[in-house]
Image (cartoon, rainbow, N blue to C red):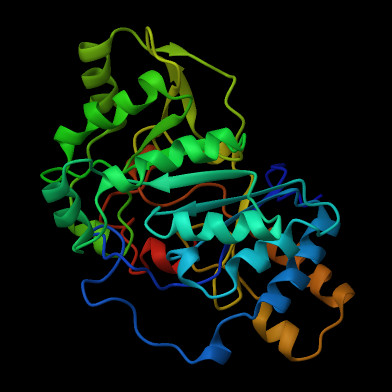
Length: 333
């Protein structure tokens, strides 16, 4: 199992299958979308499956399929079906904005390719606020909410991800949290990180979100019963069926327990979302490298995984130093 130089066990791989997205969220995507890339610059599904197999042999057990928006890539359901058959991989989940999820689930059910969990990114229920933050005329949130029940009926865990952005969706925090009152879902609030276009916007700190929730719904109490791959801290609210989660990368940090690597759609294995350190796996694959050579290169790269991200003062970095040109859409969410 990959262990970095700080003794952290790395068993979780986030795989971006595309930079493209059908939305243009202000904190993630450029307003004009991403630059066109030739097909050959993106890893083929067969190449990703090979990498997944090598990583599984190294000890990766959990995979998150992400993007961009992964469901815009043709053949994604068949790919996930194959990915779930890779020996050693125990858990395959997806992150999606949800607007293409209904059609994907129709195909996935026919193929027997349902994921082991679904994270749905939804930053507003109000149509005007949703359109403003996504810069898109997209299906409204009421078309996504019923999918929660469809997933839960299939015993697929549902997590809703919201990124509070000052001046855009603070008023949505309470309504979004309320979705967990009667549904057994996890509503998670993720602190905005200064990556790409997000650096131009102000975050709403997790502590402020917590105070809003407690003022409206009562005391939050720690809860450890939510399965997951990442750093979210979960709580229960009085009378709520589901849970509330916090991912406070900027004000608290959790690098000490980081367990993840990221594979970009172009085949670059990123060691940390805040640096350009990593390994060009596409070059290795296409130059004819054998699995043993690739394993050796991955182990050498993993040894260089940084101790902390450099995005905030929580790890001794000023905000100006911690701004990075690459948005989340380029680095697998």
